[in-house]
Image (cartoon, rainbow, N blue to C red; front, side, top):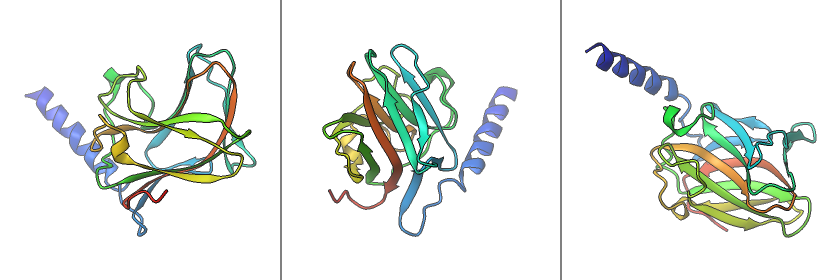
Length: 190
């Protein structure tokens, strides 16, 4: 009885606490990242196969994040999560993005041809890299890449834990810049 009551109180407090966060702007979008500012309720994590975690930094007075993926890694990721990044067994916070159709990410690379995978993940998906990702080849010019959310097969949009992840999958170093991440209610246009 006490356990059930505690669970109900936690759920009620969580639901009330997240209500203001999920309000849409008049333009029908949800800002996850603007420059180096995360939207309300989001946090960020960084990791690599060799546990290097210092390769993401604010760039150009906070205009964007610079992701300087180090050499000699099997993989690396910068990820934006609902609440603090925690192991799967400790996750209790997620966002309902089922009203959205598109993930829009503005980014560029230090050199033409840099490749990066972009993904999202449900609260119950494991941290083993098997979630659906979309590969983008970048240029040195800023560009907004719009990705239909239906390309992230297997992701429960009602329970999104990783709102966006930038995944590097080679041992070669890369430098990528990210300055905007938004969810849009309209279909992708590019």
